[in-house]
Length: 344
Image (cartoon, rainbow, N blue to C red; front, side):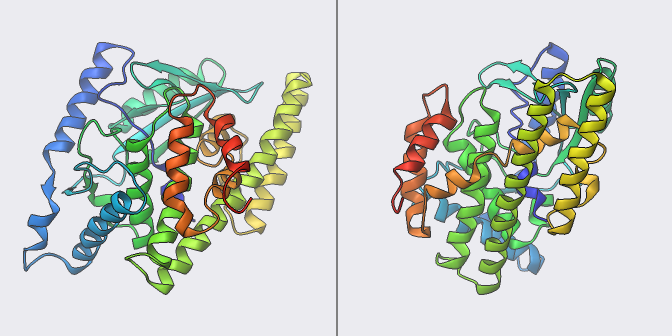
C-alpha cells in the first residue's frame, strides 16, 4: 500500500513552536538537513553514481519540470538538490484526539495556524510528548514522515529515504510537496493534505500515463494506487460518520468503548478483505490514528472531479488554488468548484 503519500507531512518545524526550546531544536535539525544538500546536476555527471540513484535523480528533475510547465505548481529551487539522511524517517509526527468525540487535539503555530500534530527529528522527543498527552486521557499516535515541505520557504531537497522508494512513490511525493509550496491554507490541515494527495497521485498518473515519463507499468501502478487511496478514503469516511453518530449519542464510557470497538472492528475487517490494509491499521480503536489518516483522504472523490482527464489536471489545480487560497472554508469552496468542473 502506498502509505508514503499519506504520511508526507507539512513539518514547518523552523517556524512552528510553542516554546523557545522546541524552536531551537527544530530549527537546528532543519538547518543540519538543509546543509547536506548537493545539486542533482552535479551528482549526475559522476561516472561512479549508483545506477538506481541516477534513475531516481533524473526522474525527480523530470517530475519537477512537469510540475512547473504542465501542472503550474510553484517549484522554485525545490527538488533540484539531494540530501543523504541517516534514518528511515526524518520526522516523527505526534498527534492526539479526544476519546469521546472525533476531534483532534491541536496546537497553534505562527504563520501556519492550528495543526493537529507536532513534528520531531528525534524519536525520544516524540515519545516524551506522547506519554504526556496519554496522561490526559487522549488517544495518541506517533507515525513517521518520509518527507516534508517547508512550504517554499527553503529549497527542499530530495531525501535519500524518499529516493529509495519505487518510481511512482518518488514522483507522487515530489508532486505532493510541491503542491504544498503552491497552496497552503493556514489552519486547514485536512484540506491541505487531501488536496496534496489529489495533486500528487493524479499528477503521477498524468506523468507516467501520457506525460514525459510515459511508462505502461508505472502508469498502471499509479492508477492502482489512486484507486486504492480513494477506496480507503471512502471506507474510513463512512467509519467517521458512524463514530460521530455514536459520540453524539453520548453513551456511558463503557458502552461507548464497546460500540467503538465493534464499529472499528467491522471497518478493519473490510479494509483487510479488500486488500486496503490490515487490522493493525485501525485496531485497537484510536481516534488520533483515524483522524491522522483522514487528513490525507477527505473528499477525494470531489477533488478527483476537478480533472475528469489528465489534460484537465493543470487547469483543475489552477482553479482549485484560485478558489481556496483566501477562504476560511476551503472544502466548501472546493465542493462548489467540483460541481461546475468540466464534464460534470
